[in-house]
Length: 115
Length: 110
Image (cartoon, rainbow over all chains, first blue to last red; front, side, top):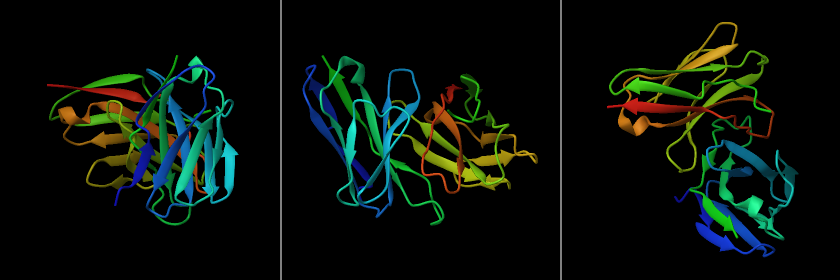
């Protein structure tokens, strides 16, 4: 049981390049989340999904797109990377509220540097 | 915006109980209090949550005041491995989002 797996763990991009971060969970969770964490700061919600085929904006969605084509995967895309997107990105998943245990499980993060 | 207020940092001696406060004065009747922690640069880890009764699990205890405007996370016997940032979050039962605040950086002193 792997939990939440993020790919890749590290990446360096040049300004203007695009990339996709993959989050996979094997717990059959309905909800999935993408966060970013800048040095010395708390986590900020980028986008989230409450089920396959649905996504919604979080606190800081600009410059990012997401897709949830399969229940177990949540993809975060950067179409044209900017240095301001240098950050550590965390993915999380949880059961739907009201389904009992609802704590979120987090991946180990993707450290992205845009130069 | 986060609905909680926490001190930015706290110290605790190893082996003593660490008591981390959280103010959530605008909490509504159907909002739960959740605690997570983040050790170094790892992904956050769930600790405990509660609605209005005190809760205890193998990691910690959660004490919620009768008016529910504040709570305290208690780590009964702190170790160096408990050094982390601790986040207090309030979340309505039907709210899909999980919003983090700035948290409390807990230093366990040897």
